[in-house]
Every structure is written in structure tokens, then in C-alpha cells.
Length: 578
Image (cartoon, rainbow, N blue to C red; front, side, top):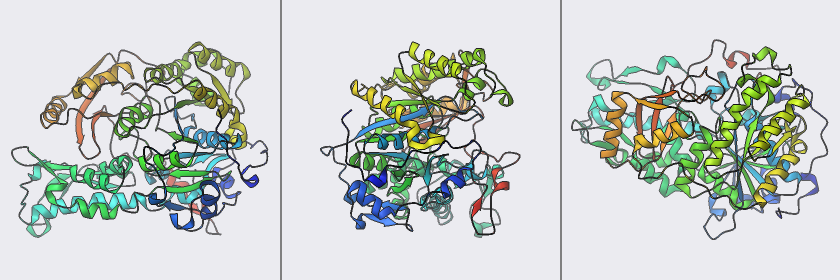
């Protein structure tokens, strides 16, 4: 593929020695001195210093006034990175996204990667951070995982300001006629706290408000988070915020943010948060990190603003969608692409030998032992994801994210299975050697793009009824045999259709650990029932959320949360962050 540019000699790292397993990510990240963000943006993108709003020396926000994202401007190719169904063995989707981007740059292709911002909930809970791993990381790692440039705080504040304004509106006469029993806007917090899922506010007498039931969700599930990530500029942001439905009147007619007249104040709080963030990889390649909607609750993609900026400044842009392809890639195409007109030019499905064996029933303690039978059984999960992507018109490249104890015969089996499905599988060592270990993968993606632009197909038409959209995803992507709607969910779907929202895409909120709604069922189950317990309307974001099974919009902490291992050492440096 003829995507070349004249890189600075200093931007091409020397070949890396193989990184030994077990080296803490945070130590690897600290071993590399970041470059000045102002200098890097000027060298790589030709952007003047005034186009960036620095947050220290190594982080910055990009002023979109300096980037031409018009339809007539040149635009790079978009590569979507997704993965098999997550397991405790690890797949390394973000690590692969970073490594692939470094691999493109090693080949002389001007490329950036677009990632989501990490949530503090998983950082201090079970999952850990989300800045890559090994030599395929984004720096400054601690800053990215902890607060970053304040976007999540702005979203949390805007969300909770709206909650406060709603209760204040009711307290001072309730001109909009909101029924306190049907206020749907809850509060959010960017940490996991199961005790706040359900609560009563307004207690203590008339001076303290009107008592009503409410609760907290995690910030990354906020509709304002989804709106920020789907908005195309300030005016679109304000329009979407005004469309948010906060509750109902006694006659069940909706009350919006626009009815309350507060969309302007919410927009003000999000003014800086709307600007994409620029950082860098360990190999000093520019990285956009912006927005962070959860993929098993929301649509799970980085912001449209960051994606458009990256495409305007690069020949290739790598982006990822959350969790497995059944959640992340499906929502990327059916929601983000549908809303924006963006289309992926190629796709990568990340897997590991270990994860596939776990999908085949091997215990975590036995994953280092070669087991071709279990691997073949677990590869059904990979095959399902490949076939799902083919439904959208994509022929993916499979990345086998290599571990040191992977046997050659296991690697060959995965490659053979992939080739039988008409796709190429490429081993990659980016965790251990950085971009050097992902050049073969990068070349395979370039080769795939050379075969022509894929014709992306949506899974359903806008005109299809909401319930049928849910059934379509359930049967064609999850291979469910049926969908079971509760009485409440059926009533909600009928109501949203009658209000004129039947044209919206649907966002399935379910466990990320299985094609079914049961997180314990691995592999590629078929014929199961997808239980939809309730449906929520995100009128501002522009989709309808189907809550399935026991998925929670405010997760809880595990028995031993990661927070117990995070601290400052004697030099004031963060330790224990992964």
C-alpha cells in the first residue's frame, strides 16, 4: 500500500530486546522519556504550538479549529481492532491497537491510534488500567489511568448538575410538570460502588426537596458520555444535550433538558472536554485518547471528534471497539458508523492461544500446557467472531497475540482454522518488542486494504421495529434461539415507538464474557434465550439501550480490588497500577 511519509530518524526506535514476562507495565512505561507534546505534534502533523492546549509537557488537548475535517479534505484509512470474547487469560486488544500503530509507523506509514479513556472504576476494581501493556503502551501511563485531562470529571459534573437542576425544578414549583415518580435521570460516579445502585433522595422534610427513588450509575454509562463521544462539534453537542429525556409528566409525555432550559449550562461544562486529547506511545507515535463509554453498557467507542481529527492528520488510523466483536464491533458499525458516516477500511480480531484454550474449557492454571483438542474446541469462539464481521462486509486479519509459552503447533492450528474461513492469521510480539513485533501484522492489514474498500453493511434498517432490531442482533450475532422480553420491556418498547423513536439503533447491555447472557457459558453457544429485562431511551445519544440478564450499570468491586495494591512509594511514584 503506497502510504508513505518522511519520518524523522529519531522517530524510528532501534530494535528492541525481547521483554521478559512479568515485567510490570508501570516500570516499562517509566523507562522511556516522553517527548514534548508540542514538538511532537509539530513534527508529525505540522500543527503550530497554539493549536494545542498543554496539560504539562506530555499531554495536550487539540483545538479542532486547526484541523480540516470537512468532507472534501483528504482522509486516512480507518482500521478497526476488535477481539474474541474476553477471558481472565487476557487477549490484549488495547495493547495490540498500540502495537499495530507502532508497527505501521515502523513501515513508514503515517499512523495514529484512537483509544478510549480509562475509567477509575476498573482501575481500582478488577480490570486495571487501559493504556496498553509491555512495550506497546501509551504514556504517561499513570496520568492516563488516573484523572487524565479532566474529561470524566467534566462529564460527571455535567450529569450531576442536571440531576440537581431536576430536583431543584421540582422543589420550586415544577413548572414543567415532572412526575417525581417518573424521573428517569439518575446520578453518576466514576468509581464502582454497589451500595449506591438504588437510593432515596430528598429526605429530611420539605426544605430538603421532594423524596423520590433514584440511584447512581458509573460515569462511563452516562448518556452524556455517549453524547460527548458521538457529537460532531459544539452545536451538535448542545442539540443532543437538549434532546435528553429526564422524566415524564403524569400523562407520560416526556420532559427534556430543553424543556428545563439548561442545555446551555451543560454545554459550558463540556466545552474543553469535547476537545480530543493527544499523548504518545513508547515509540513516540501520536495517540488520541478521548471519551470512554463502556462497551457492555453503552456503545464502547472513542469520540467521533478524535476519530475525525486523526483521519484528517494521518494516512492510517487504528481504532478499537470495546470487549469482543459481538459487543464492540457490532456497536461500532450499527451505532457509530450509522450516526457519522464513518466506515472501517479493515478490521483486526485479536486472540491469544491461552484465551482460546480457556474458551475450550481449560483451567487458568493449565493454560501453559499445549492442548490442541481444547484449542480446536475454543477456536469456535474465534470462528464466530470472524463470521460475524463477515456479515458486515469485513474480511478481518486475525492477530495472534503471542505468549512465550505458546507452542508452534498451536499457532499453526489457529492459522489453519483462520485460513479455512478465508482470513489470514498473523502472530505478533508487540508486548515484548513493541512495533517491531507488529510489523508483519501491520503489513497484513495493508495488504488487506490493497484488495479494495469493503462495502460495509448494517445489520438492520432504521425502519425495522425496535424489538426486531434486538432480535436481529440476538439471533445473527449472539446466535440466540429467542429473545424474552419482560412485560416492562415490552411496554417500554411500545412507548418509545409511539413517541417517534422507533428509527433509532439499539445498544445491547449484557455481559461481555459470553455470547449468551450467562457469563459462565464460554465458547460459541447457540440456541439460548436472550432475556431483556428493561429498555432505556437515550434520546440525546441517539440509541435505545436493552438491559439484558443481570448486567449492572453500576458495577461492584471484587473481593480483592486492585485498589488494595495501589500506593505511592518513598519517592512519591505510583506503584501497583496495572
